[in-house]
Length: 188
Image (tube, rainbow, N blue to C red; front, side):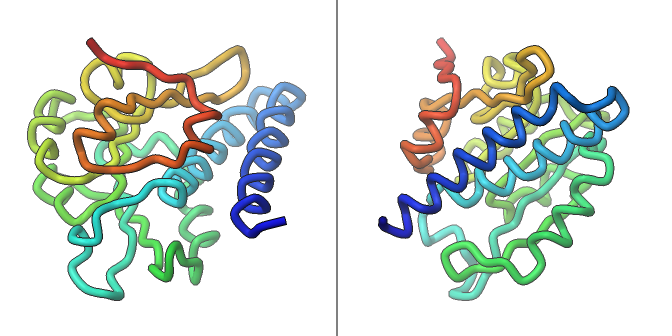
């Protein structure tokens, strides 16, 4: 069995296991687990997306996962910080950054857009339009506004949708295996 096949099996199995576990948890734990699932998915979106090499400032530049707005992941990003410490994707380290302004997005490869107070989604998308930044947010409206990946709830399960058109416009490539796990939404 090839390494790629093993990784895909682990990804599918791990996600399936996490999603099956959620309905059996008490409500308080469900919120924590939902946040953790979203944080892990965010890391995996990074793992299964390809960026043009020109986005990295130097050979050893890290992947930067940035959060703009009010952090809705609660403690999950702190846990993710610890979990990704020392991890690499394609021989690059991973950094989790909380940013305050859209001007700071230029060095991000992944941008999770949380609850915005200082900007509208349209302002953020207009600013990052010319950069190969994978935008991730919550709800189908996020994609309809121009986002690339959106979390949504299906019962008690966290799912995600992808807008391949927006991904292609940013000159990014998402693995076909990840796309098979997603709901595809094309904005008109």
